[in-house]
Length: 230
Image 1: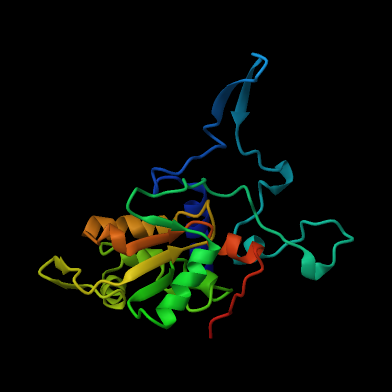
Image 2 (image 1 turned 120 degrees about the vertical axis):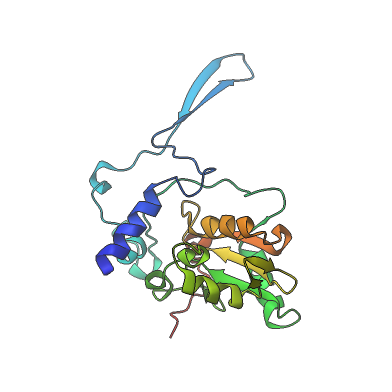
């Protein structure tokens, strides 16, 4: 089971089929033509070049959140490590209606959800193996496959109930739909955007969907509080 989970994750991290707007700069570098103030012309190629030694690293919850990529003189508790060559980079915005959040906006969302507005829901869209490694406080784990009725009908119904949506004879009622903020591992992770795209296909109001693009990577790199769910 763990092997299948890891295989699925590797496929998602390295495939752009789930999110058409993501850019695979390793396969499709972008050329930039630039003329400086002295009329000298330059052409740059923007790409992502993984370290040859890292190409065979198996991506899983331990290799993503473990490792040691720092000078040996840096204290262990100060080291930051992350696989930065995985996946395809997401754009800053999903569309003009869905807001992209940064860390301070996430914190404000959390505060409002716990005080003035009980209809706000922070969603960790990663698989449980990742969620139980660490997550953002108050986040509810609704794994991204649960947003696909064809693949996970039982989990799909539970997901709808969690976010305040009812259905009858295939007709969805969004009158009590909650305002959601979804995230996954980082700017190269398609899981939260895949969940959002599936919600939009159902007719979920775009103005009730928000996206934390930086995800767990940006959150942890900022040394913000994480929890290990019980």
